[in-house]
Length: 390
Image 1: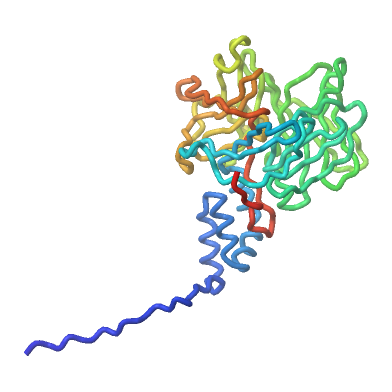
Image 2 (image 1 turned 90 degrees about the vertical axis):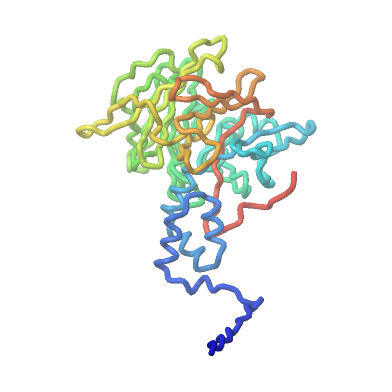
């Protein structure tokens, strides 16, 4: 006699069921956070519930690591009329006409501001105001940070770098490089947020193309000849001067035009030298050399490398950015993406370290020089700003 089949009781799922994410153990939630690679995933993680948002805010180190090594956006501009300039953000690896979701960018709509834009760092744009004052604007949130005015002899500020994203806390510093006049060479300024006055380096007799970075509690710089510099800022708040020392000689690289210092996801520090071989065709005849800064017996040595250890770099009028190419489809390992403006030609060049050649040169339709800019994330806030259709 056949056995009677057991009746299986069907369980109806409730349409009103919602998972209780806050009930998950903190160890499990922390393990999820540690596996995040993409910054947008970090934002989605923060938006799940108050508990997860609190955990994400607590792990500022993870936040910083993710943000500093995200795929940057390309900021472009176009003139609508004499009073209005439109700004767009693009993902250069996207296949859908490079467009990404656009936000209402909070950038002053005047040509004067754009002409005096010094570049981007940690998701902030820096502008000169009245030639003697510096302000930082977060283009997604519209937040403005105004800094104390410079000394009257500190003119033509050209470059700047932040030690970190101000949204992660007020304990950040700024370095600015400027011309001190046609006959007075170059001077570097430093400010800790909250201080009322800038401190300054001694003037260099001739103009040097300096670039600086904050690396492992140090401020390091590089000249266009590959000389590494150390900035020694006094802890005495009353001191108005600081010292810059060379800690190595020039490296063997002919006609270098600009240098960059960039930290990788593995916390290695690279120095990149860019050279225009032919001045008449600056965007065609170009090459790069990359050095890894290695500490030996307490001193930094420049070691020439032939690859980027799985990374690709984004350079230009911005804080240098490194990302792991394998994390982003469309990015090529050992490639350098350089945003440039040359006469009426604006665009992005991709240089391959592997075969030492420009792999691709892409023109960009923009009024002003295209800028790489990192996504910024307001602390304790999960919104990236007001999304609009453009």
